[in-house]
Image 1: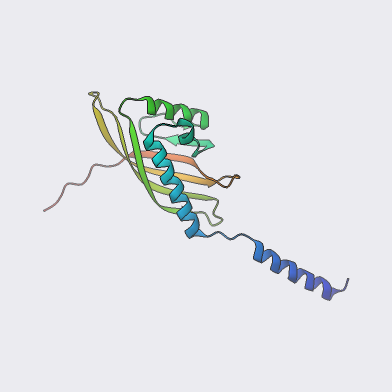
Image 2: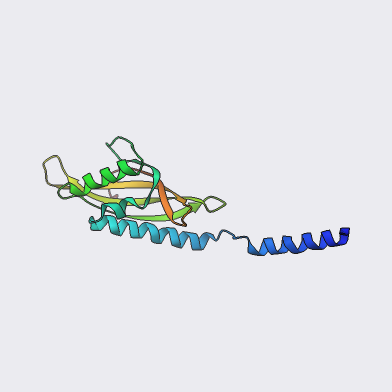
Length: 162
C-alpha cells in the first residue's frame, strides 16, 4: 500500500469518525434532565410508589437531609422513602433549575427549592422549606440518575424593609 493510499484512508476514516461521534448538546440535556427531575418530584408528591421513587437514585447514591444520618445505597434509600411516606402528614415537592454539566455531559448538578410537610413538635403538620443540591450521572442504560442528594433548611425570609 502506498503512502498516498494510507493518507487517503486515514482522511476518510477520520472524517467518518468525526461525523459519527456523538457530541454533547447542553440544551437538549438540560431539557431532558429538568423533565426527569420534574417527573421524580411528581411521583414523590403522589407518594404511592416507593420503588418508582427510589428508581431515580443510582444504586450507589448518597442522601444527606437535615437531622438525618447519611443514607447510602439504594436499599437504605428505599427504606428511608418507605418510612417517610408512612409518616402521617408527610408530603414533599420540589422544583429544580439551572443544571450545569460536565464537559462530556456525563455528570450534572442543579439546585432546588423544596417544600416538605412533616409532623411538628406538637404533632400538627409543619412546613419545612429546604434548599437542595443534586448531582446526576448518565447511567449505562441511558437514564439520568441522582447520585448525591443533599438538602439543608432554607434561611428564614428576610424582613421586609420599608
